[in-house]
Length: 317
Image (tube, rainbow, N blue to C red; front, side, top):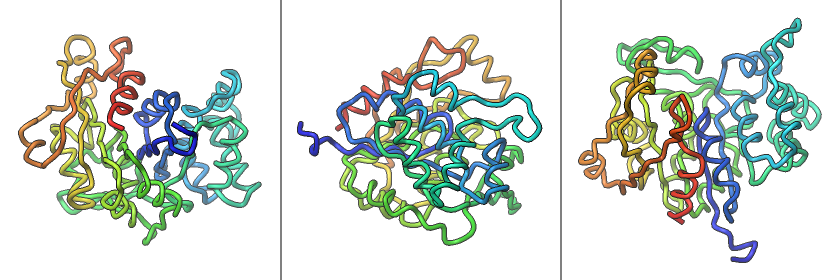
């Protein structure tokens, strides 16, 4: 394939699942874009967005690190978190650099582009929006919980999530990237606080429906306490459909091996359990189901296997 004919792959998400996919995909001959949530309000990100009125930099920082081809020492520095120091304690160096570059360039997205250039990032990184935005959840009992970090702590059944201030204007480049993609991947991650905050931005749902490419959802392997307790794979898809309408997801990738032993017990302590793959319900939803052993068995915590998932995703193009 010539340089300008590489398939365009867009990954949408945030949290811990997204960098895992990107690290594997960046070595394939594709034109790669990442659209990242900026609704985080905890820790270093939360402090910087409050003090500087910028979108949350934390998930962006992790995506830059995943896609960077810089020297390992430079990446270690970028990901370094200060353990002490009055005012510095808890801050990640990369978050501070993103905040500083936003000040220098006068714009969050321009700041990301400059740092991406310096750290030799493969692909393009788009914040879902170029403004400070806040995530809220309406619970089944009618209570409204505000703040991404507070939503799981309420430990209630979530009815829907929404953003303020309205309308949140998505980055035009992000909308175009989805519309023109050959493959759109919805990354695994916290369903209501990492995945949906991107998808519920107006115009993004429309772009997912309009895209000429296939939209594939990499389903979570485990449920999450306070967000998706007892959710099956179809429940995850249903939550997305309830928020942004039918026809946005074409395929789902599920892990099809049993999760047993120590790992399962470790998660049980966190009130998390393996996501049940209710294949019939998924088929009834009209989804293409792609099964495989997609977790990294060498890790103590359950993580998608970077190489396995990237290979599987690339095979879909």
